[in-house]
Length: 232
Image 1 (cartoon, rainbow, N blue to C red):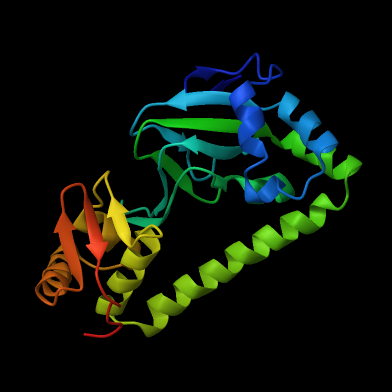
Image 2: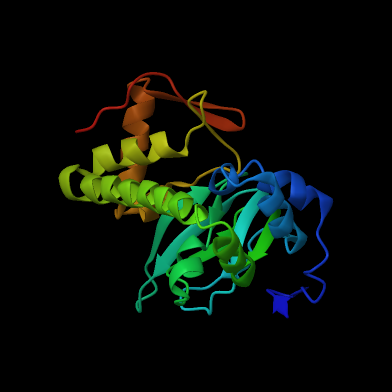
């Protein structure tokens, strides 16, 4: 089998870096060591260059993807070619968990923003874990609930905030614990795709945030200096 051009015929050979990584992923932190070791045997590490489409909306789903290094973006396209960015995911995050449960096609597309290292865990391996360790079902439910709450917050932002507030919310979601948004640089078009607005409107809002000293543009990152306004 080939995943986006990478030969996976030897997926039954575990990679030592994949073994280390699984224990640090929130989805697997509560899994006892003996079960996790079995799951790791079927994990495989793959490397993908920047701008590689990892999965496409509607694809058959066969794997859980765990980001070991790099950044990816999940997005949707409509028939007119308009794109909406759902979110950016970093090291330790994962995608494809919905398809582990319902075996339905992918609900969104995912592309690499930087060069990435991705750990793939097959759906069959996760189902085997569920059979041997039923408590893992509760872990899955907790993680899915967390993501549903995140989607609820996103819908709330779209419904109740003006564009100014949606941009502020997007910037806060993109920043790290130090209130910094690092390279690769997020463009105004990227933010517009996240908040359902035009690039021109986002550019005007970003300029106002700079003038108001809510944010500062530094070499290699944007830093949030004080709480961002929710309304214009």
